[in-house]
Length: 355
Image (cartoon, rainbow, N blue to C red; front, side):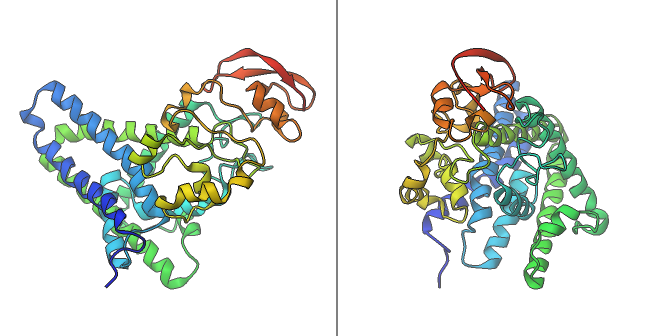
């Protein structure tokens, strides 16, 4: 009997999922018995576990499920829905079938993006939305969605007719569609019941630790996504994302740093992503692309990141812009470039490029 769909290495991810599932209620139980510093450390741990699960564990699972058994994969989805405070199946639909279809696209003629998580969605003049509104505003919007999910208890957590986004992303094949929508229902049920358990164990922990940790985790996830695409060229499939190749980071995160490679082949197992870089080397080296010296979570430290999304950095001026680490102020006419602070500040940089 085959247990693993790809490799027994995924058992590590299963173990991490189960560890978080066990640790979280233990922190709630111990809340009243520990000191303030330990409570703060516990809150930081909850934030870390949630952030890591969303960015690494559940993200990998949504692309390549671990088990050969559909039922075991359904169980994993339920467990990690408790761990990340949202339906993993819904995450799979919005991430794989929306984000990876439209790849952080720019606003179209209708004034919005097709990728609902695009960093350009609320930007102006063809620019990324500033970091802080994207990170914190996105977290608030996510929590609002989670509240609606919990409130769907009135229909036993089923996907409602008004949830047009999820319904449009669900499979058009009847049997698969039914399975996906039922999985969302099961995930939501588990998440909602876990909140009841947490409150019964310690309402103080739930209010003063879990909920703030959840908000900060969502914020950090948005920071991660922001710098996975900030400065990349959304019009080029080989340079629309940002990679980071530090060996220690990729060892600890199951090759999460190979993000451009992941976008080229989203269905590739995490253990094979370095091979994608080798296989696609000619394509990846055919044009400038952003390779970050720091992990995406620390992308704000990459002050010299080239901004290939700028109109002045389109072919044939990409190399000049890459060398200048610059952006044009106004795309229609030749203008001097300036270096940009990802949060919004600007300063002059040597060199210039033209539109």
